[in-house]
Length: 115
Image (cartoon, rainbow, N blue to C red; front, side, top):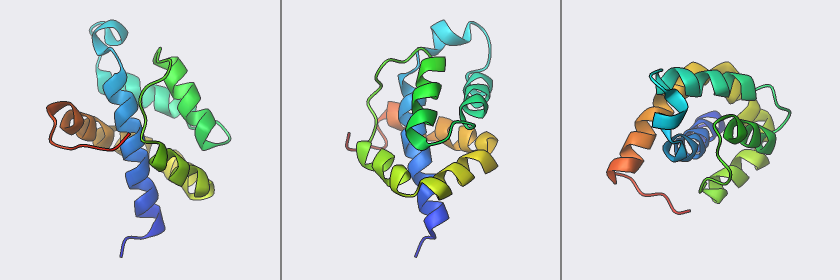
């Protein structure tokens, strides 16, 4: 059985992958690395007090208005907020790499999440 922390990590990866996938990287990156930009914005957002605020700040910093998100995962993160914030603050760089991989899978159609 997966630990609660691993389930929270997986939920973060799913939610953040949908955000990553929604970004118009050609406009945002302008020659810079998408990984670096996303990780920097995630680092900046992780100091928010709760999950909805993190998501809102991250989306705003990436010029996203209302990306399609897996709401069941967002709700799971909200229900496990203490663990969710701990995971996010502990490993934003690793999360960014996993998020980029998941976003690539979403784009190529290898994986489908219910929105």
